[in-house]
Length: 195
Image 1: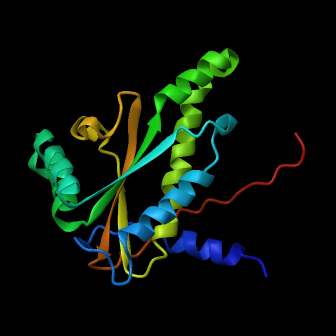
Image 2: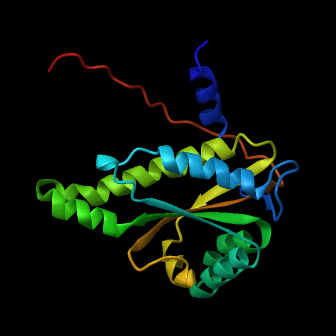
């Protein structure tokens, strides 16, 4: 039997969950989250199999400290709301990074493609983000939302090297509420067989 219907159901059921609890769902461990994320990291495609993607998982005091520093860095009260909720209402954060030294090496070794390699790295990282989010959303009671406070690199100290760029953060915890109704734009796809 084809696994496609199961995959499509996983993709369509992945939702942005902002209402989180600072705990893991019953029966879910941080080791399970790590194992799932490591497997997806290992198997995410990248240009020339260069594997520029890296991941950190923040929990406990590290998670809270990073998000509190983000809150402090934002000048407006309205802008502080989402990172404050990440600090107070989530269990942890998966930080998605790219190793820019990998991209630089590709640019040096394949100069004809040099301008494209940064985009290739970001595209690969996007695949890692959505695949991780989709897989983890299949854990009963798990909720997450994707953020892009990429300046938080400065708050990670010596946990990452200078060559790394923060691409996104998946803030996660146990669901406190379900997502709202989802709407869709009509987006039909044309099949072109001749030009």
